Image (cartoon, rainbow, N blue to C red; front, side, top):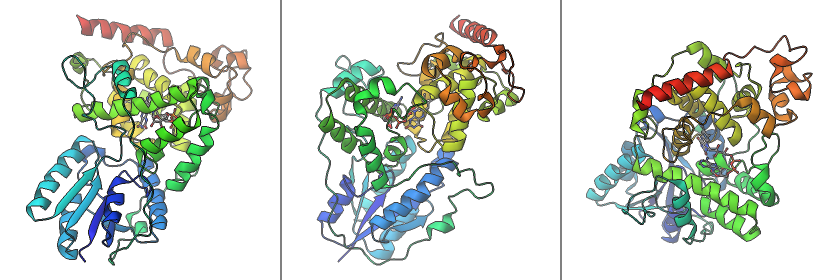
Length: 456
Ligand SMILES: Cc1cc2nc3c(=O)[nH]c(=O)nc-3n(C[C@H](O)[C@H](O)[C@H](O)COP(=O)(O)OP(=O)(O)OC[C@H]3O[C@@H](n4cnc5c(N)ncnc54)[C@H](O)[C@@H]3O)c2cc1C
C-alpha cells in the first residue's frame, strides 16, 4: 500500500488535526513528517527561544506517535519531493500556514507534486476562520479595523474540533535524530529559567488550569504580578492545541464577561493572522506609509540597555528580564516596553520586533509584527503615535505594590512601595540599580516633535 505523508508544521498535536484526521481515515500507512527548514523563511528562521520550544514539542509529539515521528532537515520542498520519490507515497497532506513565505513555498510545491501525479490536500488547522473568509460589508475588502472585524467574526459559528485519531499505522522509515539538530542552547544555557512544558498534553493542562479563572480574566489579565492570563500563546503558536479547541472549551465553561473578553483576544490573534495574510510586508514595512520616513534614532547603547533590562525604569526592566529569563512577557508589559523603545528612545520598532522574535517562546510572525506596528502607531487600527505610555504611571496602575517589578528586579526589594516605580526619587535610591537612560518628559517631547515633522 502506498503511504500517505502527513507534513506537520505548526500543528504539533494529534487531536483536532484535520490533515492527520483525514490521513488516518484513509486507512493507509502514514509517514508523520516534520522538516527542520532553516532555509526558506529568509530572515524569519526560528529564533533561539522558539528552537528551544520546538525541541521539546517534537519530543512530545514523537512520544504521542509511539516514536514514529520522521524528522528531516533541509529545504522543505526538496525534502518532500525526494521523500515522495523514495517511498512511492501518492498523497501528501498538511494544515495550512499563512505566513507569506509559507504560502509561496506551499503553493509552488503543491503545483509540482500534482504535476508528478501526487494528490495534495491541505486544511485549515491554525485559525478559526480562513484569513480570506471575512470581508468588509462596504467594499468587500479585508478588515483593517479590529472592532468591525470582531463583530463580523463573532457572528460566525466556529467548527467543532475533531477527535484524535485511533491507532495509527506507520510506514517504516528512518528518521534524523532530534538531538543532532542541536536546537537547545548550550554555551551558555540561557534556558534554565524556562518554566514551561511544551507538548499537546501540557497545552490542555494549561487550558484546564486557566478555565477555573476565566471569569476573572477581564480584570486579572492586566495585572502582571498575577497568573491572570492563560499562557497558552506558545502552545497555540506551535499548534499543540488548536484555537477551535480553546474557543469551545471556554464557551462550554463560562458565558461571563471574562470569557467573552478572552474570546476577543483569540479574535485579535485571528485579526493579526489575516492582516499578515493580506499584507505580506507587515513584518518589515509600516502599513501607514508615512512612517517609512520616520527619523529613527540609532543607539546601540540604549538598545542594549533595553534588551538587558538596564534602562533604570523599573517596569521596563522587569519586563525585559522576564522575557530573557522565562521566554515570555506579560501582554501589558509588552506594550509598555515596546512603547519606551519606540517613543521615548526613538528606536525603530523593527529592532524590537527582531529581539522579541529571538527571545519569545511564542514568537509568531503575524502577532509579533502586527502588535509592534500597533504600538508604533503605524499599523492597522493602531494606537495613535501621540498616545505615549508613561511607564511610571503604568507601573503604579497595574503593579501598585511593585510585586512584579521586585520579582525580576531584586535591586528594588528594599525600596518603599511608593517609590518602587520611580526609585530615583526614593530617600535612598538603590546604589546597584541604574539611573534612567532617558528623561521621560524629554523623550516624550522628542517623539512628538518627530511625529509632527512627519505629518507636515
Ligand atoms: C509588542 C508585542 C509583541 C507581541 N508578540 C507576540 C508574539 O510574537 N506572539 C504572540 O502569540 N503574541 C504576541 N503578542 C500578543 C500578546 O502579548 C500575547 O499573545 C499574550 O501576552 C500571550 O499570553 P497569554 O497566552 O497568557 O495571553 P491571553 O491573555 O491568555 O490570551 C489568549 C490568547 O489570545 C491571543 N492574544 C492575546 N492578545 C493578543 C494580541 N494582542 N495579539 C494577538 N493575539 C493575542 C494569544 O494567542 C493568547 O495566547 C505581542 C504583543 C505585543 C504588545
